Length: 460
Image 1 (tube, rainbow, N blue to C red):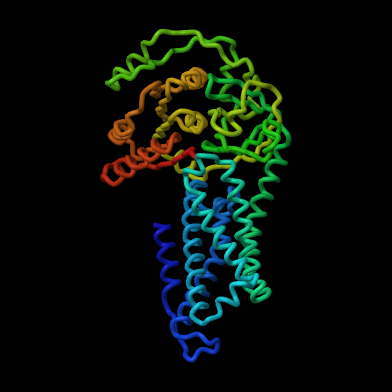
Image 2: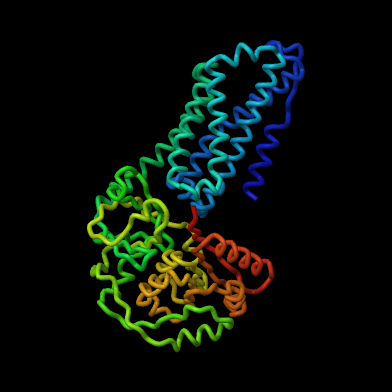
């Protein structure tokens, strides 16, 4: 609804209330005059949208501090406002081109510096729009990010010279000052957060072939709430890209205090798909016991934070068992909707793969919690790593090598008789989309149970 409103508002404000005055003092004919007015207005609206485009993309967006919207929501709005900005830029360029061609002034103006810088801003805007598609972000995210910032700089510089070389200092530049101020504010707050946390050393332990556990000792974030995340830098891991950082869910090291024993007897989990859900639970309960080696590098103090990371392309692929890894932390960043979930009578936690890391802090935050987690067979080492942590959870469903029945799971919660159920899902985009759709359908169904949904999606 917000995106639709914003699009319609831009369409209306760009289309209405044009009046022509002939003969025109600048020599425009009726057609060229109308085209010029459309070009001026769309250009001005485009300048006004620039600060908003940059604001919505920042992790230190001040609107996050005054609203209950998540960072993921603002990223969606950033993309849509950027698309509308691009439309305004393209319409401005086309209408002004046609207007100047109609008056015969195109040949003279097209060679001037202000015109060329306008072309730079337009072309860079269109390039950003194309290169920001999910395909390119997944293909090489770090390359996309660096290129995205570089193109954004060219857009702002192009916009600056486009008006300054034509009109001198004017009201258009105020929008560019605002856009630059928003960007610098976000970077300044990031630096201050890193400086506040100080230079840290992390112990990294392999958890199977695909995951690692990162323990940062001696750090306590007393103000963290469930769902917090931090952006982690490892400057020495890749000396050619020391600025590279990734967001990870924050887990207090206190959660793992029971995993410091060298050996622990735990329940193994079924790894072959079963057809009946009840049989799944019975076989899990009756599975034979086995001995699992625990991480030797587990922290002995509860003062610290832990990250469980899945190795992927880029920086995380370089992570492996080592001690004393130089680490910088930008965080914590808290989700503002956590309080709504905690006010529910029941909290259902749904995770997929390494998405369980976003759910662990919720276990101790509410007295009536159900955990449902599915993982691939290749992630069995991660499941074993968390056995001790999940042992205290009375109501849980952990499946290895098979998918959760999300629809059945949510419908059972709706029939359980709770007045309000909080649902937190963290996992692949497909899982998050299915949970969102099912919760929305149950909410529209008119049942007595109300749902509060929080999606902690992790994707490129």
